[in-house]
Image (cartoon, rainbow, N blue to C red; front, side):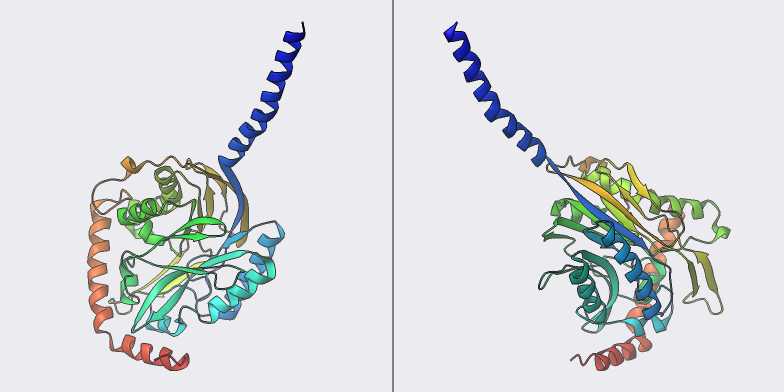
Length: 348
């Protein structure tokens, strides 16, 4: 009888030690983080109006417990195809990053968006992530401008897209870059815990028929596509409002369309966790970050294109990209804009 009691006591002691350890292992297998996307309106060249809209949504997100807030691509400067876009450019540590630092320290959050960065004699679409701590700044340049964008800023080329931060390893991808295999390959190599996607994408004209719906579907499905390959959550921010812009190289031609909007957050399996509609709003959700993500590199197709665009869209994208690069390289207006921006910020 005594032996039986002793055996039971020994077993109880083993379980008392083992079960907490097991529970600890389970807890360490994943963690949660509350994040937010701010879907702001597109206000071309209205820096103060855009900043006021963003600040309101950032404050709301912080009040709801968000540790990180993602603003859309070019959240503070608008989005249009015109030479005056260069007047919104700034150095990496310019007024936008200063403003972001102030918000991060006020609400103890991390904040991300894209700026028009001047570096050397070139302009770039650069995603910046800022934190509340001293020197917490990480940046990733858009690898390849999308079509007509190539008239106004330079390709960043393959550059670091995953960064070690106090919140974990954060990956970054910008708009049309999400349609390319080199983007997801770079993220895969960087081993992110989750990914931020920044968009500023208007709908394509209705005159393009099925290609309009295809382009919308490709953007909306990009987070799930990346999540399934990388095995981690993806947070996507997009603008709302109206795109109203001339079309470079086509005198007198213009384009007026709504932005795609529908900012979203997907889980590590690519399932929709939360989504906005067309409204100006903030979306707050907790994401679960797996300790050992299940990657699926076999889902990456061969070649350059990740999104299954048809031949016409691919041909149009490649031709407009080449034409835009030529124009950007030889543009006298661009070179003059570089001089003005350098003078404005006392850059060498």
